[in-house]
Length: 351
Image (tube, rainbow, N blue to C red; front, side, top):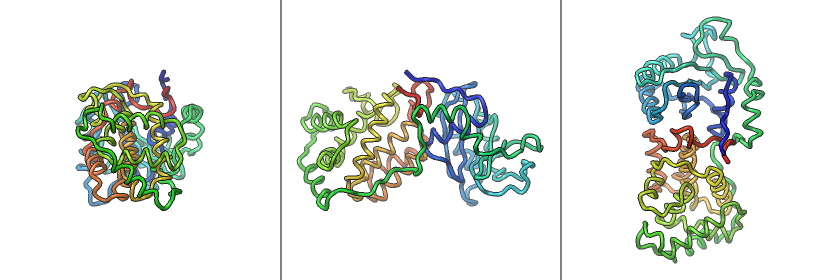
């Protein structure tokens, strides 16, 4: 059973946001939607360069937040070490042109900004303030020592030191050849006939592997299935929902099925994929990176999803699944589960 997280202070909010991403943001804008006093979706975007106009960027942000149809407000976060000309003057705060554009566009979208904060390596402060009493720079230890931070760490949430896992290859010289030879024996005539022998074999093998520590032989078997498009897509969908219904399968793959996944199993699938990376040659990692990016997208961790998809396209330039998922991510499409607090992933709080 999921447990609700209670956020009572600004430090709690600033502790919560990095845990939803899985890493500490750098030079980023952050947004958290609100439904009354309930926290909704989180979004992080790199601070753009000067060639991007604040109004255009703000319109894109509003478009990405609109799929959270329950949202009636938002919180704004700026992570930067860009110096402020005067920390007590809003007009002198870093990226104030963008902040003003966000206020206009989100108000227009019905998601007005209720509060905001500036977070640097030297401390944090309220963003929308104009006097010394509220603009005082607070120590980062306030965030680390907040009640919510302690709760999330105690519950098992841990931020990554890197945005995406990419372990050193420890397999044999012939591992890649063996993976492709194993994949060559599979034939799938109908990608939505889940009773085909290859489909049944692949799904059963992956189901049994979750929660185990695969060796090189097991990796070759499991990764070989991912080299076959139909098997790869079915295996990925199974990580969220193993329903046999074709309509549900397609909806799950596109993130449009509204039912809450078994998030504990999703986490276990993510762990398995990372373990398999270690025994998978760099040139064959695109399917694994794509699956990891897709799961991160399902969890509402857009930045992590983008990082994994970038690694997939680096591993195999032109890898179509990674390109399609990356395009979907760039359009701002959210998985339906991430827009509903009762079905969304909550790091460290799911059963």
